[in-house]
Image 1 (cartoon, helix red, strand yellow):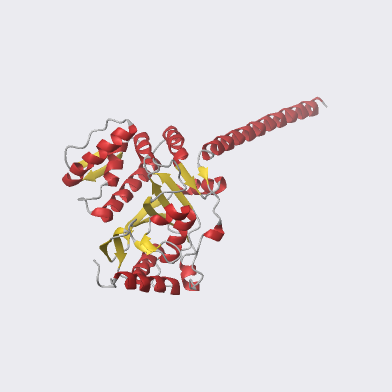
Image 2: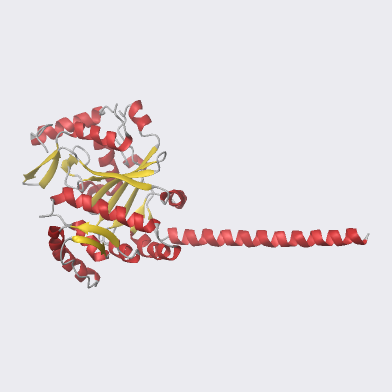
Length: 355
């Protein structure tokens, strides 16, 4: 009998210990959930009205199938100093982040902000005007209808937040040319004045660990530095370097990064969506990057200024689908073909007229 009493007592004690451990585990999980939710609450959420987001209804079944295992997200960069809003303003940066869920890679495409496209209701002008006219809904519609895409999610960031993030990451490693070092001076002077920093421009070309102001100035170089084509390439270079640095950072650095950046972000993603992305993103590699349109020319018009004209839209979109979705059998929709013909009619530039 004594043995049985002892065994029963030991069993009750083990159960109490197990119950205590279970309670501690639940408390820990709740604390982690609360911490994550608190962090994610810093991000401005914007539930899109999908009735206002256009997707071409004449996409072929083959095109839909080719896009099936990819997730394409629109990234917009605004300089919102004048209005303090992430819901309006010209989008200085328009980028497609295309996530290949099978290969675990992310390919980036910069859509040149001055691209001459239909921004809505048959109005052809610089594509960055779509965000200013109708916010993210109209910007997504512009991308979807002109490029035969089906994007339903976006992330918008105040471009100046890049400065804080790069500094918290300890800088980003980038090789610059002598011309770029010289051109960075003017941009850095403006950024130092706006942010209160006292960053010093690189003396010459070379490989550097650029601080926030330097990296932002590098990404903004335009005139004299390859115009918008090379500028978007620099933007992709900075974004890639930041992601690679973040993947190697410790939890304390990432926490500081979240605190600094999340208040300058607006997105259509819910907290659940963001958590799902976050659990995967650090296992993905940045793949190839490019700019759109591929064959293009430029022209200056009195009312809308300098624009980048696709030569022609349909052939450029065909190349885009080959790049994004490895779709060698893509056929442009009737909508894209119509837009392509309208651009030719408006500008006089067709396939073969660009570079």
